Length: 392
Image (cartoon, rainbow, N blue to C red; front, side):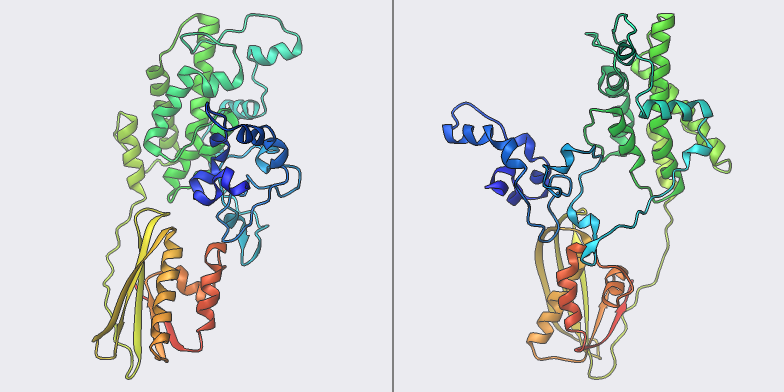
């Protein structure tokens, strides 16, 4: 009953958001309404079968006391496979140390420490200490109570400012607390130091300028528009970026053009000559490749068998469904190996353009949970192929 209610059998996206689809609607049966009444009690006793590791790590009942996401604050939806390496839990913490501390002004750094610990003197916090006064936000057309999360995250101005910068970067979900919002920026990974600095720095500058806009309204009765706040954030970030990377000059006066320029700084084009090499005499070479539209998205794979003269003996292609690029590479190679074995061939040569896959088969890299079953099957056939190599 659990997977059917939660959407566990409907794919990864539905499973992560299952709580939103469990609700009462007009016309539902009395049995269903009674099941929903008992849902919170039943939830503590539902366990997910890990299987291939696609179920949500944070929405499982690991401790026997209910879903983990109800006990700790989570910042990303992650499958169980992200926490498992070679059949065991990955206890090694691999964190890229923040680099923003060297370029952020000290006053902004200390401000962020206080903000993340909920120690900013807004009226919602001061009320807890017995300070009585009007609690009225500056950022909404219909003013609400002034709280930390409202000013910095869910208020009208805060939402518009965050959206202005996030729409270009992409990959952000909805957040209702400032801790969730800021840490979702810090957890984003970048391929070059310029993008990494942007992810570490920009969220702090957004919070800092939202705070200054609030104080300007409270103490000087001057209201800054969303555009003015965004412009100030962009100007400060551009200055901090110039301090950190003095050798780079980006003459851009708008955030979209500046982001495009920064994103292009880490792009390096390498031209490599690719050439297919014939196998030795009486040996058949299998070249396989996986393909997909996005990662993860709909995927497939294919391959070619050639003899030592380069003649094509057999070709294949197959559809795999939705999976990651590594899964597609592994399945394509495994399907090719199974084909060549079914035809009674031995002493063949395997070749793939996935260096990670080659390292996994050779035992030089840790095996992710999602491909462990297929990789074990490939290793079982290792006595039948004489060589495995990587090609670009």
